[in-house]
Length: 96
Image (cartoon, rainbow, N blue to C red; front, side, top):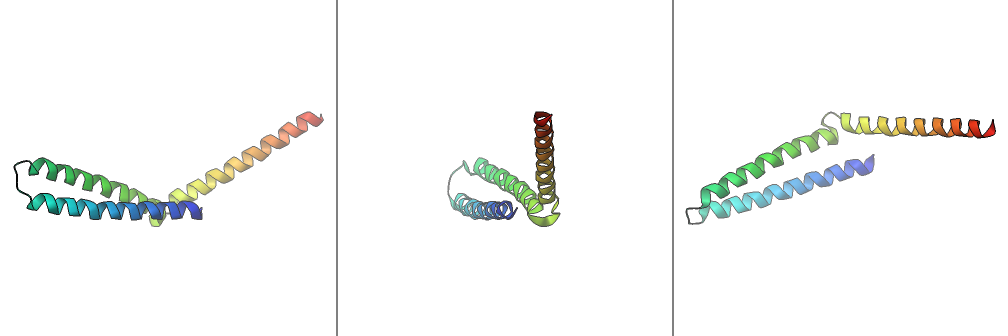
């Protein structure tokens, strides 16, 4: 579980780095001359919106609600229980 938390932390760092790069590109586009700036500015706004949605999801996973990590932990526990139950049934059939 700690590895997953670390992975999500790394994703957040990457999203922050992406935001800095988008800000730099937007700055360059806004001061550049030319008529093609509007489509680029629109695309930058779209990228920024997508980043915000992903960041919100990552924040939720990291610990905003803690539900994702808890659900993952429960799924792992359930799978382990089901596996060992299957092993016991298989062993019982072989010994019978």
